[in-house]
Image: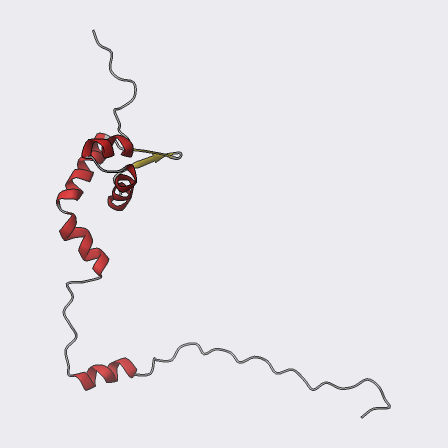
Length: 116
């Protein structure tokens, strides 16, 4: 009769790097980039679900994360000619609370009666 494991199986970035044949540093960077890890204190561990998510992220890395980094969106471009767009960009902002000017200090008066 075998007793069930008290703690779940896990791996480390170093073990995973050796499996894939890359440096540990590269593996740690990729694991952080894909956010497929758990941190316990200072130790980074990967449970089986993290390894599966990591492998899936490697497969579809080019389409999902590159778009987020490039800043491209699916929003349509604004309509109008160049002059209309330029006018829209240079339009004065609508009113809001204005900055208060600094209070002016009073004139300095000498306390010496002999001077004026």
